[in-house]
Length: 84
Figure (cartoon, rainbow, N blue to C red):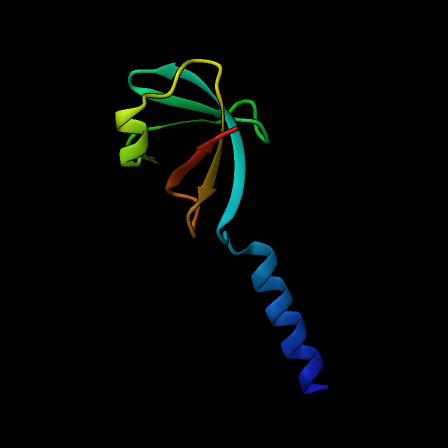
């Protein structure tokens, strides 16, 4: 019985916690960078919520490029991983 209660608590936590996740999006503005997430067409991410690595500072993103991002724990920051 106690193990079942623990399983329920852990399951509920995992369902409601904003764990890190890979998401995909499209660049809708190049400077400043703004990305529309494919999973939520209304959600647009821009600085300071985007972490832009040195690679994309040297090779700027262009409008309409598809990108992969990792959503940091809690969903407050998104790191651009790569172009698709």
